[in-house]
Length: 468
Image (cartoon, rainbow, N blue to C red; front, side, top):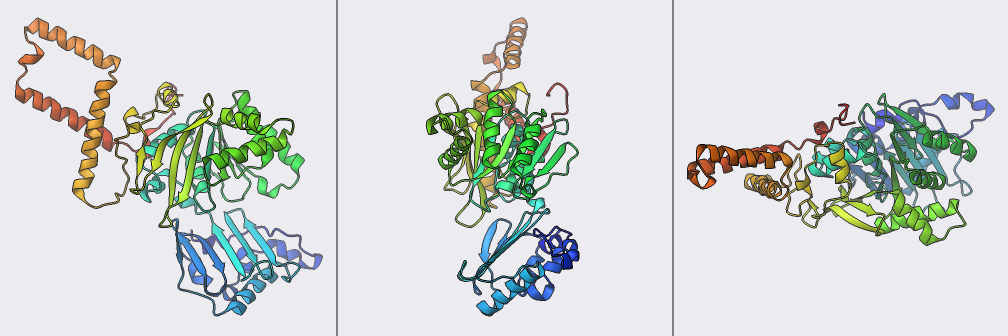
């Protein structure tokens, strides 16, 4: 569904209509933004891949599609035409723009946010239309646009299945909400989930999810009562889009009682800035504690922090996945986006990998090796040799880990082989070169197949009682 079609869907107008304008509350966005009043934006809104439109002055029209922002060749004739368009839209909302009221906002539950400003608040006049496009909110889609690698998606999907508190940070329009929704969709059906949205951008329609739109609740007491009910209801996973200070404080307190399973988004430039923001939010609800104590509480409460950003080409990327060490109060990067425009592993095996093994999640330890080559649904290069070199490199790493980390099964097999050799009077040295080569080729083929089978959309299935 294009942004234009979604704008035309029934929505609530966020202002109180006059008695003579009772029909106002039944308007759709098509009534608000009439075809003639949109001007050059009309053709842009019909694009299915549109993420947002930003107009700053008559000649500066920026369009974001598939996470990439470009300057549009379509422009307004002059500032008068732009301001007239904004005034007509405001009038349809029942708002009269002037120097005292130079701004209006419109929010719709389908994920459409519109805000506009006129002089003197904004010189030149500006309008911003943000669309949360649900079709982009899947781990497979994020892999296709190379925002994350297959291996990262597999790990993130595993984190959704276990009790870990996760922070997703980044600047505006850096796909925090998209990633939050993509992770929410990977929650196994046998687990109960809750979505709390403070920005009115997303809803999850799965049968095991309950949605709460806090953006429409102005009463703080009512907000607190609802959030208390949610936190005490024993939900398996709570996804929070743009939480307020009180909610952050409640997450910290809930984590102290081992009530975990929270994933939230936060506007922040980097990891340190994010942790500082969370500490200050916790302090605001607990004025008797100092900053160091608050920061310590944040380190104890959260386990993983995911950073998103826009790269130099305007594409949205998951920049890093880091584990929070509550004992040393430090951060350890597990995956990062490098200057070579690809994701890589740091060589650190995270502590949460032990939980993966406990839950029998199909995540191989070799993907954390520093030499491991991350893969995507679409490679950066069409070079076939480059593609196969990645496979070969990963196959060697698989063999390396197989040698370094022998399993109990492999030890039993080795003992059985030795027993067979003793009984038949043969030793390992008697193996012919042809048999040795065949064994090496078969091992490589098996490892190649294992490497190609990394499919995060299908790998994790916790419906089995044993895994749960």
